[in-house]
Length: 420
Image 1 (cartoon, helix red, strand yellow):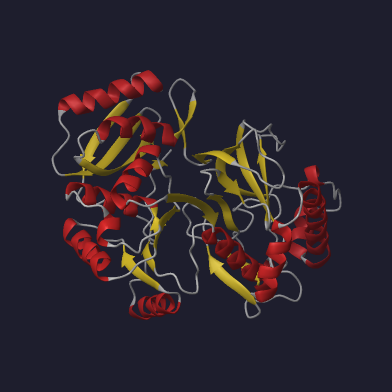
Image 2: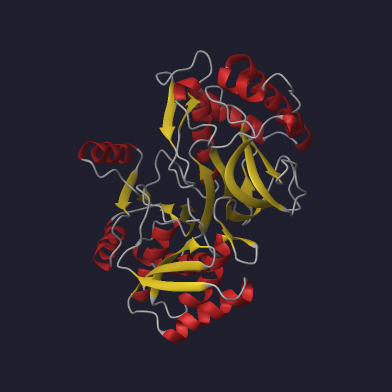
């Protein structure tokens, strides 16, 4: 860790011109390493090219084969960090990082959290994450939390009774920061609003809240700021890579350019100009155990026009490439468009706590929601009119009220899902 922290600080201190040279050297170095030491990557690339723009785009389907077949020579599960992705994109797989690369990931996390006065060695975290439900897995996770100065709130049950217990913990413990899944933290904020409570007033030690793994909408961010009374920081990362982008104190979504190289590409794998949407393709500059070179993470985003190689800014994260709704007219629309439009109407009175949208046929959608009272015909008509205006008319919707929404086995809420 000491070596990784020192290297990260050297990279951070580089000038714009020096950073450009660093980036080109690291890209060349990591490609050459895997071409010489990784049979999986050698086969993927073939013998045609070492020109960067001609290198193949790696995707999650490529990686759904045994880990031992993808590791570089000299690396094994015993001398590497091994983990599994959450599968939120529908394509889970096991991955590996060499230990130095993993140390750099932690150094990167520590550096960014440090922007807000958070020290991983001493700051106490309120953690809104999933947790294994089996006895041994649960105890292991609780022990890791203890060593890492964290108190975990399981997010599989967030009824008012449970939220009241969470509130009491904040009254009795000196938390420094909150970290966890967006949807769960937003639910807690809605509960605080209902009770007319500002969290900072009952837990004065709180400094900041970092939300991750799920989309943070602007009105939810405003709600969190109001009910928590602390800055809300938006984090975008991937377990197989690193923190990809982290909101800096200037309210910019600053992309990690120290351990990653992030490209925005079109359907033909060509780089798009800053300000234009495209597929987010990422290279891990240090991971020698396993190649993540020009890796399509499955998300669509836009880099800000003012981005530089040293300081890229993520202007917008639009959604996942597999969350596209195909409409009867032939139009393709990001599934989150439905979520945005519906959200603006469905939560006007605070009745609806959460909802998700599923496309079951080309012209048919289901909206599952959790609420105190059932949606009335007037509200439903409002939503259907808005969707017809923003997307297209003659789409069919059914509204299904539920006690709780289906989450992944890690507790994530997938806000839009296409079944076709």
